[in-house]
Amino acid sequence: MHAPHTTCPGCREEVFLDELIGGRCPLCGCSFEEDEEGTEEFDEAIERADLAYLVFHYFLFKKFDRLGVEPLRVLQMITRNEDPGTDSPAAFEKVKYSFEVPMNLLDRVRPKRCHDCGKFFLRGGKKVVSGTLVRPQHTTRYHCDTCSGRGQ
Image 1 (cartoon, one colour):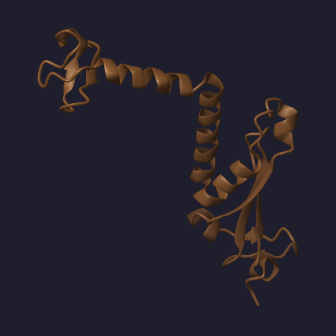
Image 2 (cartoon, rainbow, N blue to C red; image 1 turned 180 degrees about the vertical axis):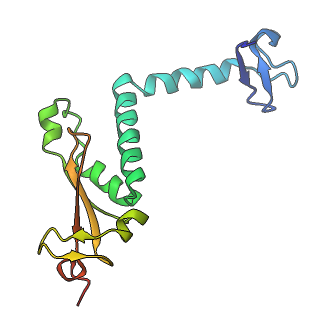
């Protein structure tokens, strides 16, 4: 049974709306009219455009989090490219990203070719993913310790 219910602001108990007595909580007598005004203000504050904006950034963050990108780097990329007028795919084509991500077990074990010098290496190095926001796939490149500056 899915009866409409809410939480009383006074006693913090779950109260079903059909149990209210004159708009008040049956347990503590707290009025719900003041709480409803705050809810209306909250609903007016979040517009549909803002909601779409938040959902888009959530999924963008989730995508990069699964790859292993540091959350601060993702936040910096989002704020750097924050523009409310970017609704067209052409605007998102300009937004490019490049992140260094940790290697998973398979990446650590298999031989990799350095993108800069073309040399094969097994250990060390770094993995870099890059791409644009328009395309769902990304490019993965590996760099050996010498080319990435770690070998010195």
